[in-house]
Image (tube, rainbow, N blue to C red; front, side, top):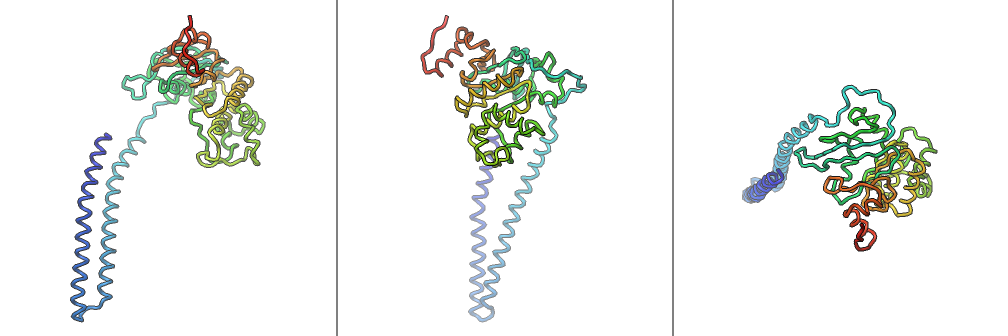
Length: 357
């Protein structure tokens, strides 16, 4: 489709490039002819010079109007195609649907289980995730590591049903997530994406997206847990400090810490940190890890990271390779059992690969 569009655009540009010189040539020839004939009549005394100037000005106005009209006609023609495409998008059925008969389920505790989960973006059988199976008990910390593009972020996005698995089951507290009302499911989850998105308005307004009507104490506690309070307190208006569009008046690390504070303020049963500490210094990251352990002991935490230092104390680490769980276990277990994990560990520690038996 892109090749077809490129060919059509090239053809259109060639036609325009061919026609424009001809049109301008004809217009200018007409103006020269008008001036020539006018000069003859002026010389004969039958015409005033002002009439010639008015004629040329009116001719320019007419030509500009015709050219503007042609541009309008081109835009109208394109708009029909655009309107058809908008209609197709609006008529597209939503993949993520509410359960037909949502059951009255108990409060979510946070135990997560994947059973032979497969997922494809294109739905053509080319799976991004293949046969993913593991269990995360309530209160456990689960690390997810692997190479770029191996499916780490996709895996955690299945938990709040940002996408639905093509096959297999994802259970929370033994119940398929498709049986939970979406609002109830997502209220129990705090999700911090790779790219921290903050909205125009105050810091306080952004934290309200995590929990409406949050108190000042709750905001301070969440900001403290995310190591954000130290820079918020430097602002004269603290939580009332205005964030510009795109949060251009904050650094990358500050945006990530505020994004985490927005998730912490929810007091979630499941917390997902999708490579959300990449722009944070090691001291702040360590403080965040300690705060999670101290303030959210019953929360099931999923940490996606390319850094082993972020996952080293996890109860279970999943090594993802080409969309599959290549190995799982604690840090010490994986140093013995997984060559992929050893390679990552050796690279990040600046050492040669170590042989483990």
